[in-house]
Length: 418
Length: 90
Image (cartoon, rainbow over all chains, first blue to last red):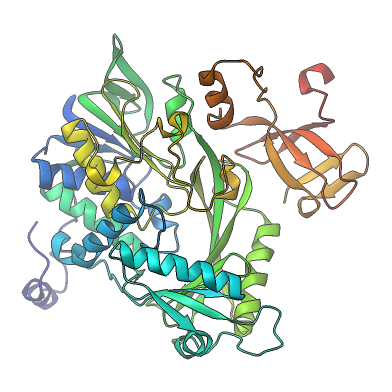
């Protein structure tokens, strides 16, 4: 299949680009694998890649019910950051930042990682104080953070309404300068191609219908393309976790909710980095193609539908227009929804069990995209060694029963509030 | 757009309501074992399909309602008061 490089592009260009090969194979499923990963989203693909690369386990199948890049990995707002507060989260996401920085070289695929800075805006003195606390905590954890004055905020993003009589005047901000965006589809394709080159079978249009058990142990899965056996079965099916776990009689600490995202027509450069509004829920960045990409709150009711409703749509747009009034002139191109695993404390689960032979990766709420490399890295380690990596040891399933929840927002067991 | 037929006010649109939660959960006894409380507080059925849930007519009559809604299609098949159940209706 060969490496992607400049010589390769030139050679193919001279031949009219007729000789490019497909980026990954389309194998028939074998009857037996060492490891099956259910779910060919970002996390599943990254897991398979790191299983092969870091742990030498290459007899791996990824079973994807749709196609690669068709789920949440292609539905997010592409933001990559690690500005977390709590101990269970900070090292995990910061390790992810390190993987993001090297990802394009590592995968030999341009994931267009662009550390253009993530800036959260404060509108009151007390909000600014909590940002100062967050920035200090981040720095103590070795994560870059800067507090910004009102003028510095407006200098970075001139289109923010800086007038004194606006409803929520800007007080200041917090910036993670090395955070930013990546091209979400490229992340999926890059991991898929790299995993495939290491021998992983990516099997699309293959839906898991049930699990195969031997005694109390899971030994494989029944799919619409036949039975497939494996020593270990990993679940990375955010959005469908409860439905799949239900087949095993497991109730997860998860509710499914829909999060909407929006993109405008392409425009000239307008927004420099990632910006979040502090007096509502609105986050925005501009893609390299020029589309203004933004999102806000989840719709707030249990749903498995990949589309949302208009009240939240209006609320998101209202927040955006309050912060950046000039956005009112832009034409919206598309709006879509993705189904989120909203967990009971707003943090994910990467764990062994709860049944022998099963491994869980779930509960990403709406922060799953940024976690893609770290999640794959840690989930691969967890599957290969039957125990958590240092970085995901806090993400256990039994933390709820034991009282070790990781609740960044301090909302308690109300998934719609995280 | 979700529309809910409030027993007091008639059919009103989504923006008048706020979502409560799964209405099928029952609070364990005070002296129930910790395990049961853990299940009650943290675990959910989270069904894909028919879901019985509470909605609050927050910007209307302020009544709490029980609603049966499909989590795939958002179709609402039954609306009642909190002490009622869809089975009893049919």
